[in-house]
Amino acid sequence: MGRKGKDEKVVKKALNLYDKREFNSLSVNDIAKMTGVPRSTIYAKVKEMN
Image 1 (cartoon, rainbow, N blue to C red):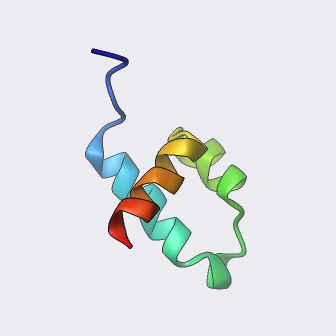
Image 2 (cartoon, one colour):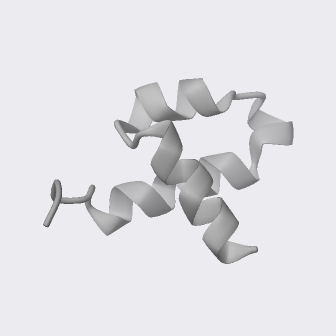
């Protein structure tokens, strides 16, 4: 059920950018716009990893 998720490669790229935020000074909004991965997905995956 529900919408099909984003490609796992794209999600991993977004998470990689999220991990390197202090060096690339990108906000989560910027990462979401660049990769097309929703902010909620980024936050959910980060929470899942921790």
